[in-house]
Image 1 (cartoon, rainbow, N blue to C red):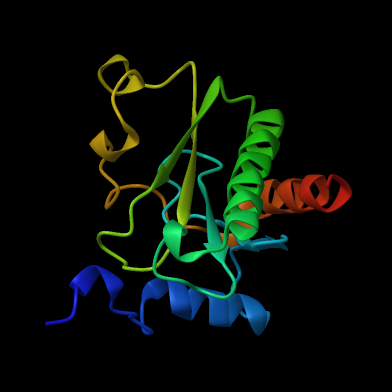
Image 2 (image 1 turned 180 degrees about the vertical axis):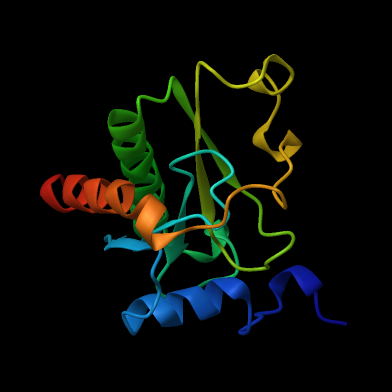
Length: 155
């Protein structure tokens, strides 16, 4: 019997978003980086929440050759630095799971000084993600453009 962890799923939300980024059809797309696509998260559970989507899409980080792993992790940190610089976040949380969408993707989540006390020290999954504001091109456009400019001018 095949190991389910090694099965390659080809129709996930990650695959669809990468295809949309390639086609220029994803309004949340910030920039093409060495290892994949930086996109704003939908929902914006915390302002500046981003994801890094690998291109090509792979099942998980250990599927990648070491140099590509390093590029992916460096791009993840680069997004985090840009988010922190632009939003004034006090720190950035990073997460790679793949349990719900079985394709590699990294969450880049800014944390703020003014978060509610009961959530400030908790992991970001404590927020009600269903109640969070959805990405809105008008409301989030300035942030998206600032992140794009920052990522395009720094290696």
